[in-house]
Length: 200
Picture 1: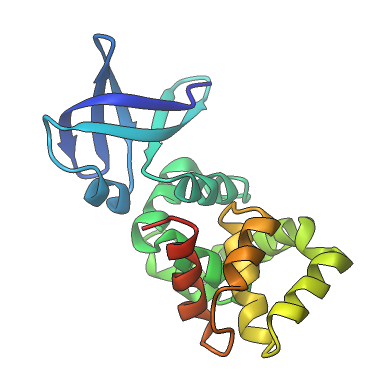
Picture 2 (picture 1 turned 45 degrees about the vertical axis):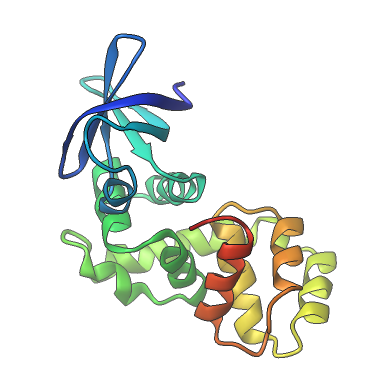
């Protein structure tokens, strides 16, 4: 498994970046969000990667953040969602919005991506909600922590779920939430938490 690549960006086009490191050019499929983050050719870039292997093809996918990579992994775990469709979805929905969409069950957002119909969009939400439910957010300790930090309840609970879906740990999320006005709407809580957690 190739965990990441760092080197000179020698070629860039929509959905593709070629990073040269150690004399080898790695062609990485990328999202629009990653393309906007990595700058222009001739600059040094760092990408987290996912190596997708099939019988007839091997492709490398690159991401500017661990959160985007985590969302990609979640998406390709859904039946009917391949790597290229996952890339397209993440080009239309930024990681924090993706997590909020899954947490709130708003499947219509996914239908904005070409090739994603209502049934597949609903499946994405249903399957990923199940995965999130199996994580530590279902524990009594976690629920108690949410209730202590979030008197308003619903908005903060959704924000916490979304942030954990993005790959942050329970302790990281709760520390960030404790520093935020939990009376704010869900989306603002998420944005402020991401700033605190160091995600631009």
